[in-house]
Length: 118
Image 1 (tube, one colour):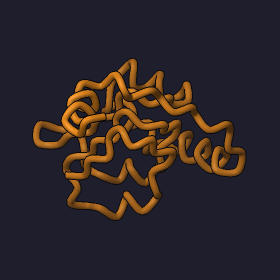
Image 2 (tube, rainbow, N blue to C red):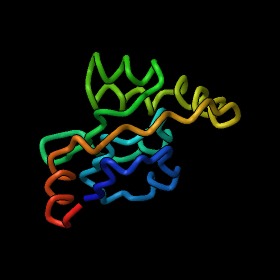
Image 3 (cartoon, rainbow, N blue to C red):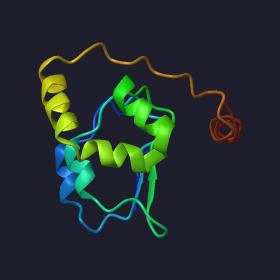
């Protein structure tokens, strides 16, 4: 299990594909726009696997796959030659960094702040 949610991550390293025993990946709530194709090498779809991708500013092609078929659609797309070509071009021409989201409204943050006396 690898939980990286709500960390304002901008990228996931290609080496994630080496984590062959990974069965749960939580990357929701970051600032990810693309994913490395190597993520498609992992077995993260099924009854005993979890892949959480919500609340990221995905590029349109990933968002379309996510909206149409959820995590399974994204994983299938990451495995495609079309995506590998697209990803290679994106690495060369990186766009603007997505803005940070205001996370002060999260219940967990409000509770923690009130306990700390802030």
